[in-house]
Image 1: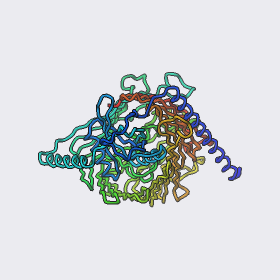
Image 2 (image 1 turned 90 degrees about the vertical axis):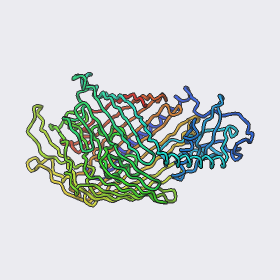
Image 3 (image 1 turned 90 degrees about the horizontal axis):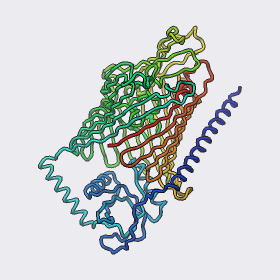
Image 4 (image 1 turned 180 degrees about the vertical axis):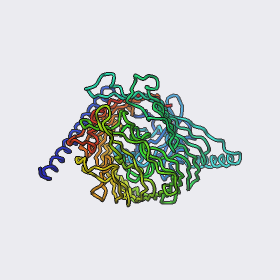
Length: 615
């Protein structure tokens, strides 16, 4: 078979996958539209039919009815606090207020008024991308909005400064806040050739708790996740899902056992002033601009015990570190130092997400070790310089320290175990590496382009062997260092679906991202899930009560594909219901399928059910 023929086959298959995904996206959007049409809930604030009387009303609003609203408060002080925070970030906002039918006032933080809905949407998109939070487009009658005169605002600002000075003299009182959620999550395996009682693979209770205690400039912050699975109560329930083979305490304080786990990914002391910030403790550093993979996020290892199905707030592991951030006039400079290495976490043998080689007579176990010794030579240090120029966010970064990605080294192969399969033991190994990186993002109307890349001078990798020649195979596999390049590039398209489907409300975002990586030496085994393309569509209905997403991921090397639709219903009283399905597929063309990553998970398709209460 010629190379050209193989390339044509791959291109045709990729086109089919993309076409199928786009068809699902269209069906999902049409379904959401009809659902909203037949069960409409008004999402626009009340429009007051009050003629402007000129009293306290901004005359410039006479013809401008669309507004981008950041927040609404019953308390004027809270609204003013938000305006001050936005001002520090260079975002101009204004404070307005209006009365409802009961005579109660609500204070609105608005970032602009616009003649057309399109202009308002473009402004809202810019704000959402910059602040990573939701901004609403609201239709107001100008006569219902009132604005405090600038003189009054100046008096308020002066009074607050005086109050602040008095508080400093009298000693500021510490503030305590606590929030989080309790969640119950269930995984049901859909593989048909199994007993029904084996389909239930996970019943987990999770309590996420965030605590902040201290003052405005110095405070303690922690995020704790407490996990408990049903097998703690009964040996008959979900025995395929557990956290660890044995009890252990990791270097970042994660306490784990078979059925119970406590994670402290964020646990730090913060001290900051107007132009700098210092933190000491367990921290997560979200460097980079990409949505799926971040080559320039050098520090934090990953929790791979559920492949990619852990939540975004769980999959990244915090590390003990000291960080400092300096806020200059046009730049932000951050330095991070991590004195000890923390390893990634992999699924234990016989847990649900361990590797299943299918027809291959081989079992597979990954050791839960490999951390580098505590030594100054194994410490990690990195720096990042960021700025915004001509509407573009740009950063350059550098790093020297433990590579966050483990090299999975086949260590030995043992004689057949009782089930007749050979046992392959794999040792995660880490090494010190040096890298430089660059990332940027830019807004073009409804589209946000983002890209980041990292170049490693000396990244470690496993030297490939001919796995069909058992006679000359040697263990452990050799490793060596090579130059390495990783790239992630893509875009977020804020789809103007209201122009296509009349009456559609909510934000529709299409995300496309391509991730590529390569060792410069051809005899090194490629990175795990190194080259892939991902698509994701997010949409919302009923004033954000219903949120739907449709995700697809194609991995080139293993010809694997994950199709992942999900829907959430938010009762807006703290309770949220979740339903999703993950379809995992891949091609197994050889007798040894270790390189066909997603194919080895083809029997692990799951329905994921969850209920969460935020407090």
